[in-house]
Image (cartoon, rainbow, N blue to C red; front, side, top):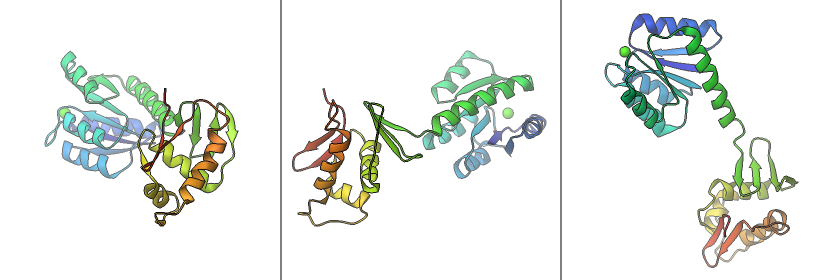
Length: 224
Ligand code: CA
């Protein structure tokens, strides 16, 4: 587990870094908002501990940069316990908020909670549309709880449709994404693959999830 600490006050920063290291975490330290943003954008962290009052760029700015890129858990640390700050932090996408001065065990408890939550959210990566499920990590698909056997191409096609559920995909887009080549316009490779996939994931089930838009392409969605 790798944690980024963004804190300008040297004593607090070192106290946090050392405490986390003793608890078994790798912690990087940024002493201002600019460095904090740079590290957050260029390294993969499991959690960011973020001070609000920082030189260069304040904690809100760093938080916005982190949220623009993803959902890394962020715990805001601040001396200001004002309700406004708390609301602002949560509005901007902070996951939790700790007012200084705090006891290290309390910080550690919140760190553990956020890391657990993050691990749960990221690890499965399971895609769902209605009762259709696809687990890319374990290379499995289920409909209504039943395991569905798919060929590699069928799996790639289903993954594409589910990843972009609700979006109309043209035959050309599908062909280049799944087969990595562009077929002739009159090729029916995509139609054939869709038909085979439907036979496995839609034919025996309701509602139908793979929809055809005549002359345009296909979309994965549940229709009323
Ligand atoms: Ca500060």
